[in-house]
Image (cartoon, rainbow, N blue to C red; front, side, top):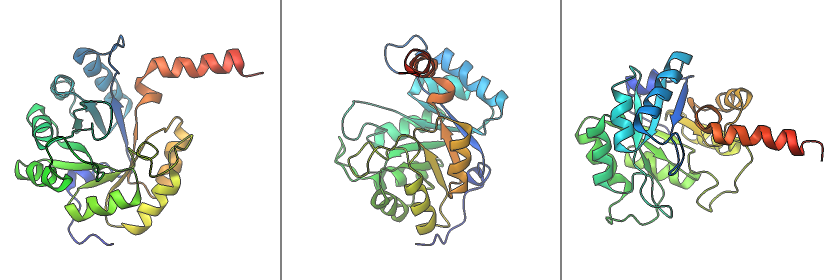
Length: 233
């Protein structure tokens, strides 16, 4: 499937770049809007081309701290569709300062009985863009047909459609890049090293989104602990 409309200039500015995801899980010491804003500013100083952030308070705090584009989402719940699950959530992300809104693009039922296309139309109506968080080729096909500005591999390995790979799902990246050559594709999910980020771009990704390996010290510490304490077992 070949895209006929032009890529938005904001998306085009991220081609070949790094997007840093600044998110902290509930109950963690870093879960505070000001902390995430500081993290985002540090990422910007390091060369990040955009920030991905969760929650209205974090989005608003980060928007006031950085000059680079912001991909916002609102997680609610833990099962099924919980990444910006309704049209209301999507519009709230725009109002909080998101330039791009990340939305679950699977065909699973949504709390408000809306569709992904409904979210796309609502967000476009107020002048923002949509990133489709996909878990499979089928998700991406539907997202492209619905008018998504970006498709991402965010949910690969988490929806039951594909196995969860140790690193980024490069097979899916390659397949999507081949099928949708004119559609911006962001590789997101389990990118833990600079080498993996480079491989994602080499396999056809337009940009890469890295979170845990940069902004989640608890996880990074656990990797080192595992290597130190069990590496020779």
